[in-house]
Image (cartoon, rainbow, N blue to C red; front, side):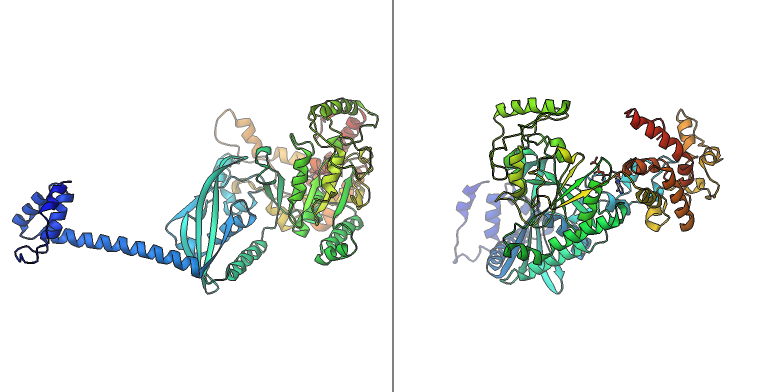
Length: 599
Ligand SMILES: Nc1ncnc2c1ncn2[C@@H]1O[C@H](COP(=O)(O)OP(=O)(O)OP(=O)(O)O)[C@@H](O)[C@H]1O
């Protein structure tokens, strides 16, 4: 730029030969090298002064920038004095709910600037996504389910991109702003920290609060009821937040847990009464800590976890799972976890006995316990545990840091656990469920009334439970049918009342035409049967026959369910084969064999 040319520029009001256009020309000459030559050429060829056009553009540019500047300033002042805002951070449950709601609003539908999200989903999370995929198009030409093909059918979710936009709700205009914040490290790697600002005109946040309540209700009323499962956040993140949302499962209906009806109703009624808002006042008026604890005990696979999830579903509670065997989980972590629970929730402490919590002065009774006590000493030497409270059983609650199966050391002493469960800092309003296979190994202090209010026994399958499991497996109700995969249309065959294991293996359908080394496997696919549809009376009679073949209190519901799952479309085959399976299982249990030849 040749600024020396600016020295030629002077405001001479007496010189009328100097036109107005020479003023910007002199500026442009100084700012754009060669401008004078170009303007002269244009003038000579076209006969007009290019300076007029350029100065017009400059004035427009200046006006635009100026108005932008003043608009920004004015909006800032207006925003500051006449608008209200509520901010939501991305680690809050509300963030996801708002994004889901806003994704369905007109603002997102008409926007030309969107963010497509293909979310990582866990096995349980994808229930909702599944609905969006086309189930008929998930098998390849050989009839094999292809996950990539299935996943490619799921459309991404479109969300508003970073920035601002406005939307209307119930006659009011709101401003939605999504911004990035500095990145923070999370369990899954480096994640993006985002915030949402929802604003409205007016000096009250009331309309935004109403909107957020509306979104929460909208979220609740969506068809798919689900239970969110939380686990302790990874050690390095625990100073920021205690819990990590792990997955979201469709809620388990209570009816799918086979248990004595009286027992089920007793638990449901007890929790229902406890959760009622009036109960909190009742407890407070009597000086009783507002907490409720349950002990579910019984052999493995009898439905302890299943009932916990069904209860969470029925009461719309989230589940907070803690394993005392979690590596690195210290007593202060445990206290923090209990202190950071929401107002109402279920805390699930699974397999409490295998955490090896016991009084150190108890004699070791088996090999595992011997290992435990050895490690207990080692653990104490580490100085990793300390007695934080001894009010429950004075004097006797030394740290019980032990090694259990797998060689991990639980850093939690019995006193530390008791302190977390019902210490002064502990949370009120939660439902604590502890599960165990060996209640006799538990310390009496852990299950004393006040900590455990109701003990629920789970037994090996009774005749009723066996019947129930059979009926649920083969029920032809709409729900049951829709959850079963179907064969490609060309390979469907009518169900016949005489279909058995032999009929499926001899069924003649077109073998796969592809000549490749997988031929044998692929040809088996053509023999996969379709679900035998049973009339209710027939189903009842078969369930009775099945229950008559399975000895009472000998097998767990999980074992029976496992056997039926292998024949989930073939109730008749299950009836035919139950005897062989029963004998094999009884024999295996007698000889303490872990593997079965009939499954
Ligand atoms: N009473 C039951 N009713 C219905 N299904 C059951 C029942 N018991 C077990 N099952 C089935 O068996 C499987 C294992 O059940 P679950 O995990 O609830 O058992 P658990 O008692 O918690 O076992 P563990 O003590 O080993 O943790 C689940 O798939 C569940 O559906």
